[in-house]
Image 1 (cartoon, rainbow, N blue to C red):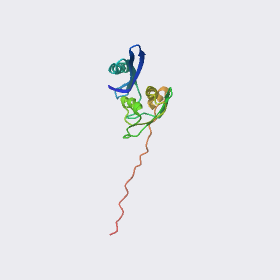
Image 2: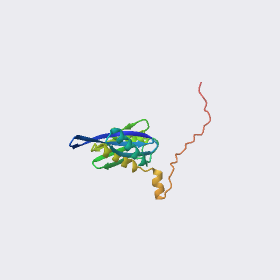
Image 3: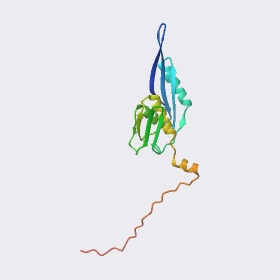
Image 4: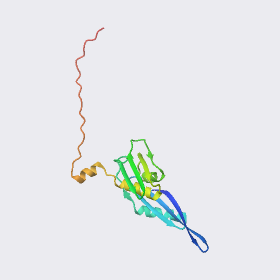
Length: 171
């Protein structure tokens, strides 16, 4: 399991003796084989917030449809003010994404994808928009099976060349 810290936030509360700090850590956990989980861990110490977030994320793992090292089709998703566009890419392209979307995509195990984050750059919302986009992906086989159709295999025509008698060569 790969655990990535996406964002750490510090909040404070003013009390009689001074300020009290609390930390929240946005954590993404994945197995790089199509499963990913996201969670927000909160505690009074950074290390505890990260540990708690990792434990929560492991309990919330979900499966994602992948096609080899990329995604099966283009998808657009929004969560709050964050919008994200994911596009499949040819092998060798790599993960073209910002910091927050990259954490989710790499944890899932995607190696080739093009992304564009639009709207809000709020890390929590971008991560959730990316996760929603990944969850809305469907493979062609699953769609056909749901509709009760058989997948048509494309048949490529074969061209046979018959050898002709050798012609006389001029010397």
